[in-house]
Amino acid sequence: MWGCPLAGTTQLELRVVEEGASDSRLDALSGKLRAAVLNAGAAAVKPLPAAAPDRGKTDLGFVVGALTVSLQPEAVQAVVHAVRQWLTGRLGRKVTISLDGDHLEVTGISSEDQRRLIDAFLSRHGGAPR
View 1: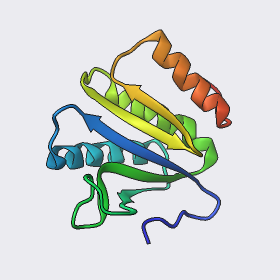
View 2 (view 1 turned 180 degrees about the horizontal axis):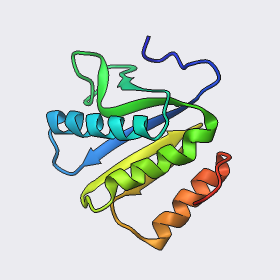
View 3 (view 1 turned 90 degrees about the vertical axis):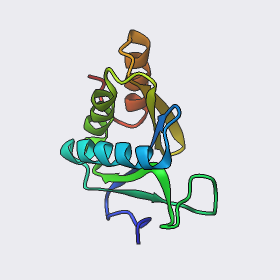
View 4 (view 1 turned 135 degrees about the vertical axis):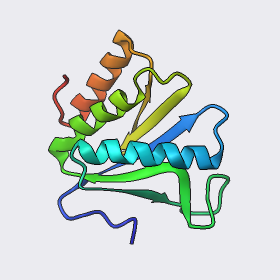
């Protein structure tokens, strides 16, 4: 059910990390990130199902702090920038974005290096840098 992508969409995986955060804190953060990503044009954002029992799995069968995002390919850029905006000024927090086996770690630190990494990631996946 959760793992079935919508027809014609791209799938992203987002993982929120905050140093020292409890599972309930990560769950709350991923809920806020979910709202930001939906506002950026994602078609659907759901908790990432747990494939096998692990430390991050809850009794509900999903990975705490992780989301699976269904979106049209042209919305990838807007969603990546929404993640960066959501993180701005939030030190100690990061989001890992995964798409087609490619991973990008986005932090709340505003830097030229971070911007270049995001632009390179978007270029690899058909999005024009901002």
